[in-house]
Length: 293
Image (cartoon, rainbow, N blue to C red; front, side, top):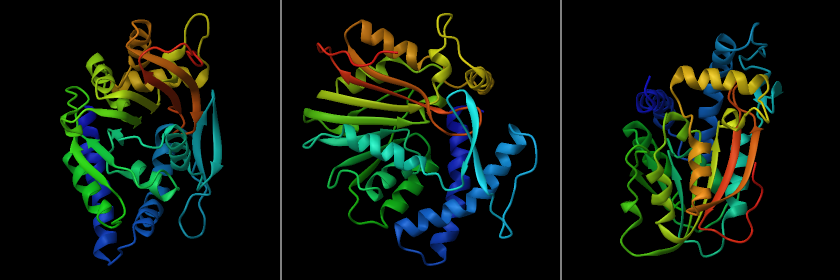
């Protein structure tokens, strides 16, 4: 299934859950998000076991799984059910935010969950935020949920990785912009160079964080991947998902278009075959190159 089709369907399913919660009279954004999560806990873990892990899902008497099955590093782990990986993303984005930045932009924002969590986990505020999303279901749901919290300054805009257009940032030159992505570039088999050159051109200073499943792309003859990297590459290949994020950023770094500062492999647990790696780059060359890996 193509990336857009996959998430149009996924956000449609998610939208049905939120529609039911909102129809019940809930108006508090944190409660609405947590009620959604409870609905998804059991079905998501059962799906993981059906696709990747042998054995039955250990369940509580009230129908919730006892644990989450994820991968980090090169191994599978069983973590407490409510391990909050969204809070990790919020912490990283907050740490790289600089006072006075013009805005924070999430590309491939889905229904806006990462931006909501950034606010609810004590992230920068007030700050202008943009949620760029290709699917209509994702944009519609993001708009409905952001309306529950008047303090949120989020503008939901269409954005397609294969035809990157940053005109939503306006005609006035910007000085400093923070971009981030989380498990959205993964849907684009070959991410185009103009995605990155477009971000670089968006402001005088640009910082970008990628929270994506690119760990297998770091494997080489010198540093071969382990068991999880092997399974991740098989999975990504089967889905026709991204295989050139690392290659493209490294090329642009060598050309002096941007500076690759940090790369961390398989450091956030997701499902059993596709943990999240983190990459940080900034616009332009500086003397300090950061941690290349």
